[in-house]
Length: 372
Image 1 (cartoon, helix red, strand yellow):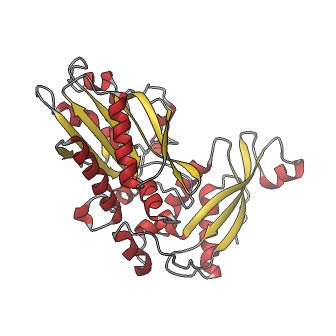
Image 2 (cartoon, rainbow, N blue to C red; image 1 turned 180 degrees about the vertical axis):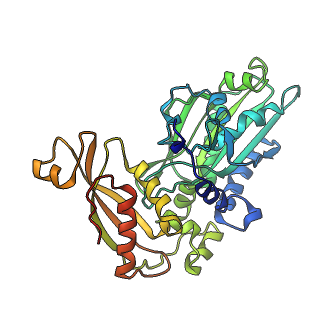
């Protein structure tokens, strides 16, 4: 991995300066109101103590991947998905990274039945649209027990409590999934407005994870569940745009303090710009989204979405287009539609063009520039 694979000091500073909406100490927000409901329901169901773990999102790569059972060659370790600070340190890609160390505190103890709650920001590379951000909030809910009889029935009870807390009365179903740190993994889907949507994933704690934290799987067991909090809150309140969770517009910000249903706020006019760019063939909406957010900085929240309308390989391009664009065999030509819609102000045409050009420069890798 070359030096270009690591975050710059400015990128790291910006990531760490984001407000954690799960933390009441950083101000009131509906995210931690919802989290309190989930934790309260599980505490009531199990009659167990609750331990909340909050730590730095800068973690050793070993904690984020190795101790959770990810193979050395796992695709999730690639730079396209992970924000590395150095060869051995990264911004956590999931709050599960804090659990192996948290579990170490139970070694040598008896009669344990405890819910570990690990909420906070995680850092990924993701598409730019109304449902995704590069720094989402997640919570891991792990029940650790000094007994071996934690079962799938216990897991189903946990799922029922979670769904009832997030979407009271909603139908739910599970499908089998595989995680390196669980056994019997399940994806939890809920029926919302006639559509099945993923809410969370869970499973029984893998014996190797317990063993790696000094807990004998012949004496210990537990449940592991992870949930994205933006998705959960948007479903609960009916929020149409993920950017609203951080909006400062009073019409929106006041609605982000409770779990009351979303009240419609008229959106401002959109400005659309289509651009034709040349990029490496390996690029996708997630990696492009990350480059766009990084280039725009504080202006990134002006972008409502960036959609790929067309993808043409070098071989598929007519000879004249290859010459005009200057593409290479390992590149593709993308047609991107950019939708600009600030939450609290209207863009001038000049401002929209400037943002369009900044996005163009951030993603275009061809020798010919087409700026406006």
